[in-house]
Every structure is written in C-alpha cells, then in structure tokens.
Image (cartoon, rainbow, N blue to C red; front, side, top):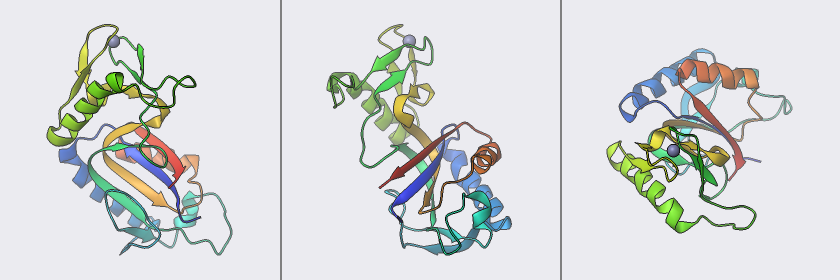
Length: 197
Ligand SMILES: [Zn+2]
C-alpha cells in the first residue's frame, strides 16, 4: 500500500515565492508534530524529488484511522513549476476551460477517443513548456480568441499546474478538515489528488 499517494498542489503561488512558502509549511507541520525534520528516500516515488519528510509523532491527527501499527511514508515537497497529473502516468486533461469565456476546449473526446487530439493539445502543451522554462506561457481560446496565461486556464480531471506541491506517500486518507486547513495556510487555491503510482 506504500505506493498510494495524496497530493496537494498550490496552483497560485509563483516560483519565486514557492521556496519560502514551502519552508513555512514544513515549519508549521513540524511544530504541530505532523512531520519530522528527518528525511527519507524509502517508500516514495515522486518524479521530481527523491526524498521527503518522515511523519512526526502526531501524524495520525490529520488522517483517517487505518490501525495502530500503520506508519505512513515520507512527504515530498516539490518546489518548481511542474504539471501535476492526478494518477499514474501522464494522461492529458480531457478539457481546458477558457478563463475569459469559460468555453471548454475538448482535448480527449471520451468515450469516442482515449487519446488527446494532438492538434488541440499541442498549443496547450507548448504554453505549459514555455511556462515551465520561463514562468510565462499563454494559450488562445478557439471560441473567443482571447489569449490567457496558461496558469489561469481551468483543467478537467484535476490536472494542475503549480510551483509548489506536497506528495503524501502511503498515508491513510487525509481528513477533509486537514486539507481545508492546509489550503488556508497556503493562502491559495489548491488542487487535491489521490491516486496510486
Ligand atoms: Zn474563451
């Protein structure tokens, strides 16, 4: 079960502020006994970092009960501009919603298609790569012709672009109260993933 993860992505913080915010969040988690300063590389599979913070003595306060002998894995703190996919592999979001007119651009036409329409996805993919490399990327809506920053688009399937993310590896399900509290601490909109790797 150690290959189970939950991820909280801050989809608003900029890359320049993400490192300091990550430190604040770690300090807060450690002060509440939810994380330790100790790090480990065991039982975690984040793509971007290879070690995380091990649980603190009070970790069970923020999870559902999975039995007394359960021990969660590390929490990876991912700083930097990344595209975060909710599950295993990197399946494109099925749609992108224009921040200006809210029209959905269909990327994967389920259930007729099971793969992204390459011509539709390409400009989004290019904008995401530009954002990762430079901090700025934009895509133009086919419906209203407005060009908007790629980070302002809304994505189907919990696809998320963010400069700060936390991967909880092998933790029992985090409580809704904790996820809400965590988002409030971040002070930004979050996307919450649960999945298996
Ligand atoms: Zn539009």
